[in-house]
Structure formats: C-alpha cells, structure tokens
Length: 137
Image 1 (cartoon, rainbow, N blue to C red):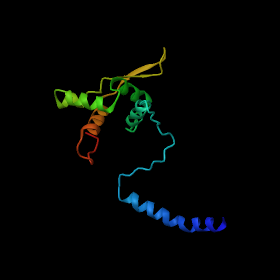
Image 2: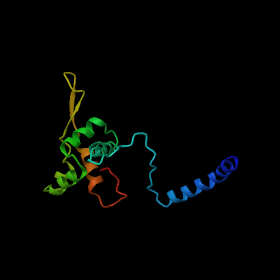
Image 3: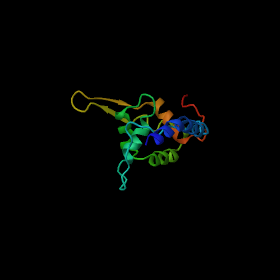
Image 4: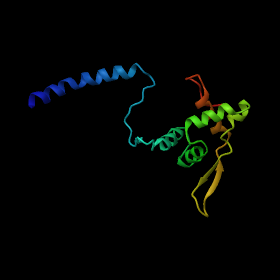
C-alpha cells in the first residue's frame, strides 16, 4: 500500500500538467466544478431551471428577471424562434424590454421592466454569429 501511495504522489504533478495542456487547447474551456449543478431527469425535468441559470449569467440578472423571461419563453429555442419571427431588427432587439419583473410578491412587492439594454444584450447573445461579439451598444 505504501508503494502505491508513493507512486501516486510522484505522478500527481505530471497528471496536472497533462490536464493543463488539454485545457489550454480550448481557450473557452470552463471547468465542470460547480457548486450547484442542475440535474436533468429522464422526463426532462430540470431544463427550465437550467434555462433560468443560463439567463442569470448576464450581469445584474437575478432569479426574478430569469423567471420573468422564462415564463414568456420557456426554452432558448422558443426565444430564438420569437427573434426570427420579428418583422424588424429594432423589434427583435427590444423584444424582451417590456416583460414585467415582479419583486417580492404581496402588498410590498414592486414591479419593473427588463428594459432595452438587457433586451439588446440577450438578443445579441442568442443571434450573433460572431463569437467575439461584444454585448454592448
């Protein structure tokens, strides 16, 4: 047992170097280490939560905003389809801006809209063919 343990310790740095080389081949590679992974069931349960978490990757987008968007567009495919059906570029860019976001349900709850800036960023993200596109006006 001591021999196996010594061998594992001796080979550990080499294994890390190999992993690092593999990761450097893809500059966009993201580690799979996640503190809260979304489990997708065989029946498809979990996709909505995953979609909400994807939307929350945008700056200043919390659970309330993600929930508001996913209640209108329950999947990325439905959002992209809605973008394609827009009659003009301006309409597509502002498709999400008037979605109402509710905060704190009840008598003390407030409402706001998503707004044109976030709507534009999400539009660019899901429709751009340029991977280096900057998501700003």
